[in-house]
Length: 223
Image (cartoon, rainbow, N blue to C red):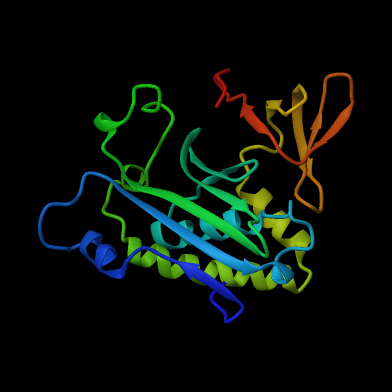
């Protein structure tokens, strides 16, 4: 992560400083925080599906810097009030594990497509104050390193428990769309490898390792 055996690609420092609070000139209408981390394959998690430590690091970093607790939607979406604030993607091209993270700090709602306006959220809108990308990057680098070290030290279950503490998925009625079929039921738990356990109405339990889910909210809508 932030060690010799890993590389990280972060936003240009000059851009961050100019976008930070107190910067001179008009504030840009939109600001997203894209980051990438590269890990040698032999140092990544023992099970490639066990990628719940990056979203835990993101949620923890934002809670520390912004004072808000985001929700984690399985697999790796950052949410607030049922709306998406950010997300994490991972792929393995060759011998490296590449983790991409994106966080919405500032958005111009009017410039978004109509079908997205009710689905996205951003940090400055939630907090009602300017948000420092510099502080988020600092906290995120530290939290990513902490969670990765926990993974290397075999603390898989502790990471899963931290993920569950931010979860908006566990205990909710969901619809899961996999490559083969649609599954409806209640999300009851995560396995040690991070698979989502879904219990259907007939009591059948299915372990999901990939796919898209929608969650039934308190008002009956799905997000």
